[in-house]
Length: 166
Image 1: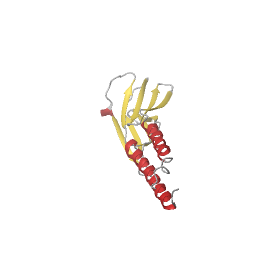
Image 2: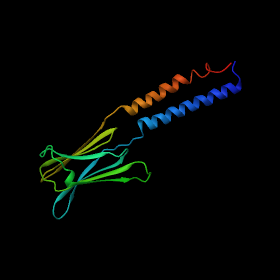
Image 3: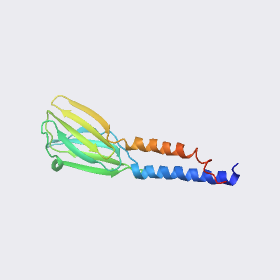
Image 4: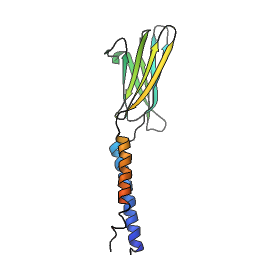
């Protein structure tokens, strides 16, 4: 029979193992955030532009604009992207503006980091504006990490009484 001291000792060891696994998950798989962008038309006196905005991303993503008509075009020189740290100082708001857009074209704002890719599409015609958005998880690291954490926890906790010193 284990003494009270041994039970306390192995309970503390079990808690340390659980905390170590949690820290390993955070470091190894990272904390991430992602959101679907909203794309809107901005009108000014000389031309129209598109504004793509997504409220929460972490880690910092890349932003790429694409066009159905101008496939393969590089829009980096006619767009401006900024990343603003949110009030919690962890996630960032992504804002990207594409200048000099043409009517009767579909544009896509693609925001991507190592966890997710979100796309906001907008089609602007003389008579209407159509929008569509979608989100794709790029990796199953996060779900693998959570399941690994629980597997480690449930495998080690039942062993702790057997590991007690006699």
